[in-house]
Amino acid sequence: MIRMTSAKGKILFIGLLVATLTVTAQQVTERIKLNQSGFYPAGTKIAVITGGTNAASFYITSTNLSDTLFKGKLSEEKASKNSTTVTKIADFSTLKKTGSYVVLVPDIGHSYVFQIDNNVHHNVAVASLKGYYYQRASMPLSGIFVLSVL
Image (cartoon, rainbow, N blue to C red; front, side, top):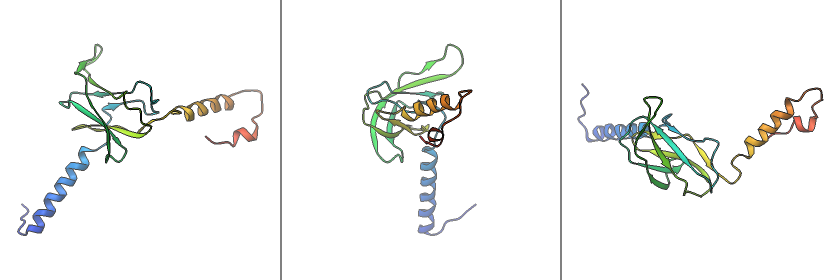
């Protein structure tokens, strides 16, 4: 058993405990599913939370979790017809501001980073077209296109 006799020791211990709990509560979780390539500002934006949870709200925050830009209510829990998975839906379609964000659900964690942008699929489209270019047959690849980057 550890004995803490000084006030500084007790404060340090409590501070470390709070810091540990804060860090574990803000971990990336696989339980929040969303389109990681991003969303268009005027498009539908949803995330699916898998597994049972008592959480009723979700937040859209900056990537460093310091600024909350949107607060919403999670849907009622729904059971899958084909498995034992239960889900809740987080609909944040009314958020139109472009930027990089995460979905935060208390007691679960936060999602991977996603973008809201007018050209959110530009890099994916360019990479796909390059794939077709590189996969063609019976023609040499031109150096100016082979060396270009996204």
